[in-house]
Amino acid sequence: MQRMIEITSPLFVAQDKLPEPHDWQALFGSDRPLALEIGCGIGDFIAKTAIDRPDLNIIALDYYNKGCDSTCRRLDRLGITNVRVVRIEARQFITERLEKQSLAAVYINCPDLWPKKRHRKRRLVSRQFVELLRDYLAPGGSLYFATDFDDYGLDVANFMPDIPGFSNCLAPDLYRHELAEYHLSKYMQKFMAEGKRIYFVHYARNRE
Image (cartoon, rainbow, N blue to C red; front, side):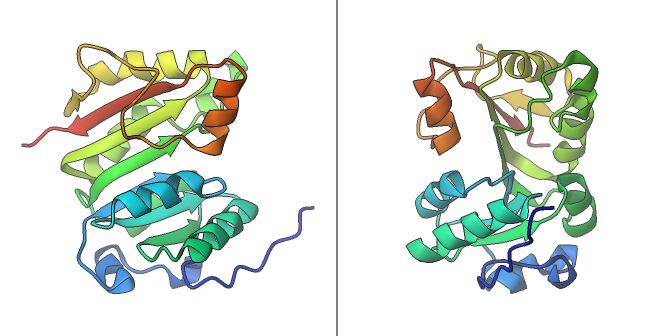
């Protein structure tokens, strides 16, 4: 069994210390719009994004203790203060700890592939999950998805147009292999060095 790392960073928020859905502004100490990264890995993407977007309060989720620790260490080293890191399952966090229409952006980069056909129902990003996210995005809020796996990228790109309430920010393209001003994580850079392509999908919730 992997040893649990004690995370002492002030940016880490333990599950029993998570605020109620309406109290995130108090936790961050500001009323900036809220953004969410699902699967922060080692934290390189969200660190770069947080530096570029000081106008956002960002919650970085990961299910793995080691990833949360690596992310906190990176953020602390860079002096980044507009991110909070939480170790929790994404669906549980969204439904229990966020208000609907509260997110200005959601970032999902290279989630678990579950490449075998019989396992694909375990993939995080499905039609049902996007429909859940839609309710928590503010009008005009962005959903970004990126993967290096062709099947996953094409699957998401092809079902997104059928989900009501979204507009394709890349139209007429369903996806692109490059996305201007979107940071590449080290995982993405590694995959690209191996000759793989990244599939970027970008939608925004309609302004009602």
